[in-house]
Every structure is written in C-alpha cells, then in structure tokens.
Image 1 (cartoon, helix red, strand yellow):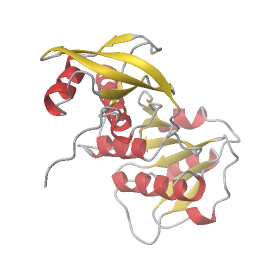
Image 2: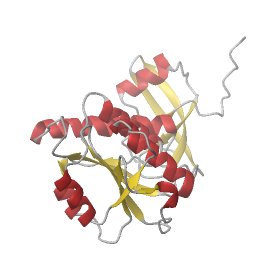
Image 3: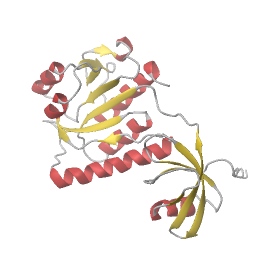
Length: 254
C-alpha cells in the first residue's frame, strides 16, 4: 500500500526551541534537531512544524534547510492549542536505578504531570550528589522535553534538583492535596475526594525498596494520605504511571 502524501498544511513535527517566538521570527534550529527533521523525518523546505518554548503557546512555522545539520524555522502564527490537563500534580519520585527513572519521567510527562522532584531516600539504590546529581538532572530534563515533543504538550514540566525526602516534605504547602503510594494499605484512588480546581497536588512514589518506617511516619506527618493501587505489588516505574493515569481518568482530561 502506498504511503499517503504529506499535507503541506499539516505539521510534521512538534519541536521545543530555546528561543523567543513571535510572528515573523526566524529561529535557527540546533544541529541535532536540524538533522532529525531533515535526515530522520525527511522533511523538506516549506514543510510545516509546530514550535513551543515550554511555557505555553504553540506556534505554526515552516522549516528551511541549509545543509546536513543546518536548518531554521520561520514562525507564522500562534495556534489555539490546549493539550495541558486541568489536573495539576507534582510527582515526588524516589530515585531508581538503570533506565527506570528515565521511564518514570518520560511516561509521567506523557500522562500530564506538572513537575517532577527526584528524591533521595534511605532505600534508594542510586546515590547522587553534587556535580553528578546536576548532570543527571539535566539528562532527566532532556527526557522530559523529548516526552513533550512526542506527546505534543505545550508546557515542559520542570525536573527539580535532587534533594532529600525530609527536606522536600518540609517545603510543601501545608494545605495542598497530598498522596503517597502504599503496597497494601490506604484508600483507593477512586474513593479520594476530588482536588479543588486549580490546586497543585503532590503524589509521592518510593524507590525499588520502598520507604522505611521512619520515612512513612514523616510522610504521614507532612499531610500525605496513603493510597493503594489494588492487591498487586507494582514496580517503582509502574506505580506512579498507574496512579497518574487513574487520576487523569477521574479528575483530569482522560
């Protein structure tokens, strides 16, 4: 079967750019993005793309190529796009190893999370500090940007600096809705009260080894309600995704 021809008016890619966007602006694209558009997606001069700077609006633009790794976009107009969920949730995620943390960030961004706080906990296998922690944070922020491009989101969730669980708990608003995921106790998500419109909620998921008794006591003291996700034990990279999907179904835009 022949591949359908691309419509000249249909954007072929959704691209994050670190630039000021306005009608008539010409934006030079980073070499890696130019390569991806021209060599991987096979876009041609004049093809349409959408651009976003991670703060909110989406812009229609046409792309032009000047070489293998050179391209720019001519911004045409602001688009009336709205793909951000009315549900605002910050995910506090205990550090996990390997590609598990990447997957958690990628999928939670696709599911509409507002921000992500990587947390150092007692049982976390991954230990990060200082320069190594900042390099990993920058990597995770790039993962979040790529997930926004794939899911066509407008706002890029911030990936916060790695901090200790206790320090993070101490800085949260006292009256915000807060939930933490437990294996065998707590309420079902379906039985939780709906958060007030416009409020920021906080969802906390542990690392591979879960939380210690002392950490759980601190979490409850900080106002977090225990939440369970059925009778099965979920992996750390699955738990937050399952909870976010359920919350989007009940209170968001699923």
